Amino acid sequence: MDALTYKGYIGVVKFSSEDEVFFGKIEHINDTITFESDNAHNLKKAFEDAVDDYLIFCTEKGVKPDKPFKGSFNVRIKPVVHKMAQMEALGRGISLNKFIETAIEKELENNNEKISASRRKKLDSLLSIPNRRASKGLKAE
Image 1: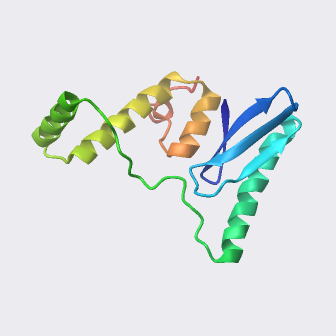
Image 2: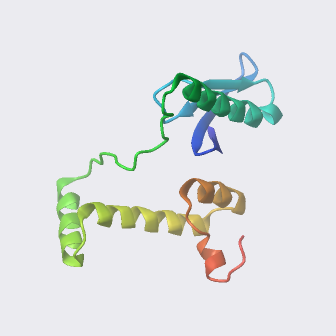
């Protein structure tokens, strides 16, 4: 499975060997918006057109388009991990939310340094996390 990004929206892509068509769905919105193409070359355009059409539809109907992410989610972890994280956050004088946010950002930054330049560009556009290698004066891979 692969993903496309455009205007902050994510499209997950699959291939049907039976129908010989690429197809996808815009993720993280309440509506079901799909796109397809019979070749990989036109798939990106079909996705971008689907996003643009969705945004136009929302404008015409006076509906606020769904945002891809709200910034909150539930996490299920072992109780002992929850307790340890809470204690660590208290020790640092920050909230548990801030502690978790910092941990996720750190993991993404570490991962960002290990991935290919093309994948890094996609993640940077999604996450707005600067390329730490560039900020350290290092060449991108």
